[in-house]
Amino acid sequence: MNFGVEEAMNLGFKLSATLKGYGGPLLLQSYPVERRPMMIRALEWSDRHVNKFIPWWRWVTETPG
Image: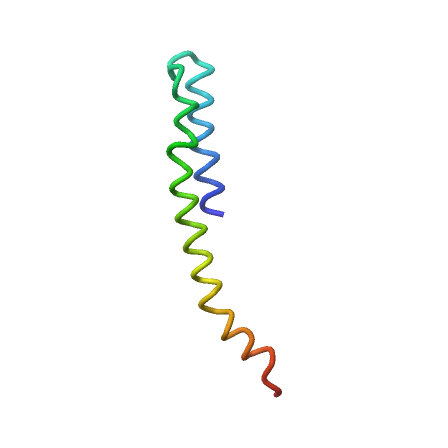
């Protein structure tokens, strides 16, 4: 959720600046350059988090009672 809001704000700012004429020709091209590393980090963190809790989830769901 946080990344969705951040993405919307970043892209919205860049679109607005470009449409108003003061964003410069390369402003929109900076979006993937700025955001891609952040999303890669978020996906790596998410993957580590999921893998950390999979054994616990299996134990909880497979343990009788």
